[in-house]
Amino acid sequence: MPVVADLFTLEQLVSFMQVPEFDTVTLELARELTTIAIREEVGPVTYDALTDLSPFKPIALAVAKRLVSNPDGLRSEQIDDYSRTFASETLVGADLTESEKARIAVILGRPDGAFTIRALAEPFCPETAAPCQAL
Image 1 (cartoon, helix red, strand yellow):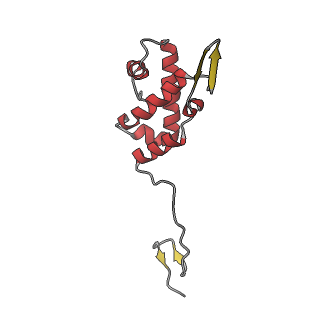
Image 2: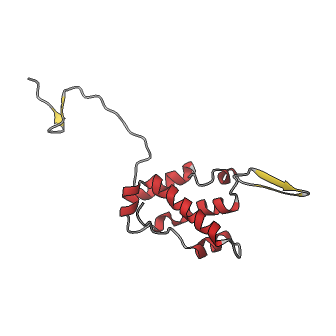
């Protein structure tokens, strides 16, 4: 795999998470897994050709935060009288949510997936990309 540019710095992730410190190895792994997921969604050739990755930063930070704050994909946890419940978006790990995939598609200018197939009344000539004349 070619050298892939980082979508964010570790300092940006710590700041985004609003937590004073984290294990650097954990943060680096979260950044790497996030980059892999986004690169896969964009497509490696397209991703590697992009010169500005900044539009992906908000998505990347959200995915990395999810990885670090809920690495086991727990729905909830309880210790004695303390309990916390995670939002359903935090349960997917490094996988991108449908919302994140849709945001990436918008960034790339891709259509929303809807398309129309039209039947041609006349034979179609691929050489001219137009209806063929009847023989």
